[in-house]
Figure: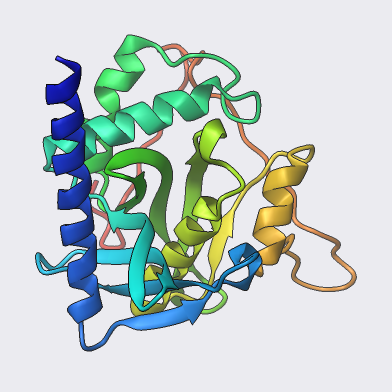
Length: 247
C-alpha cells in the first residue's frame, strides 16, 4: 500500500511540474527577482499563462543550469471540483486561526461557500500549491473607486497554512493579485488586517501596502462593520429604485 501511495504521489508531483512548466513557454511571461527569499541562492517568480490558458505565478530557482519549481500560484476555476475542494479546505483552515475567525466554520457555511463565490459576479480566487497540495489562498473581489473612476481589487482573505509560512508563499499570492489588478486596469489593491497581526502587517508593508489615508488632516482609515445575522423580520423593508424610477 505504501509503495502504491508513493508512486501516486510521485505521479502527482510530476504532473504538477509539467503543468507549471508550461507557463515558461508563454512569450508574454514576466520574471521578477525575489530577493526577500533568496538567502543562499537567487529565487525568481515567473508570471505567465499555462498551456490551458490559466494565469500562473511560479516561484523557481536555477541550480546548475536546471530550473527547479518551488511554488505554483493558480487562478482558481470554481467549476473544477479539485479547486472547489481546495477553496473550502483553505478557508476552513484560515477560519481556525486566531487571526481569522478564531474557530471552525459551520457545515452550513462551508456548504454555501463555493456556490456563493460562483454566484458573486466579481469573485477572483488564487490558490498556492506546493507539490500539488494546496497550502494558501487569496480570495478577492473586484470593487470600484469613485474618486479615481477605476476598478480596484479587495483581498478579502489571504492565508497560508501555518507549516508553510515564512517561505514566500504569502508574498507570491500578493504578487499574483497585483498582476491581475494591473491587467484589469485597477487603481489599487486593498485589504484589512487585524491590528495585532504583526506578521501579516510586515508582509503587507514589504509588498508596498500601507494604511489607507486621504489627507494629512484626516488621519488613517478605520474599518467598521455591522453584523446583520441577528436582524429578524421585524426590521422595516427597504426598497431600491433604478434611475428611471421603476422598482
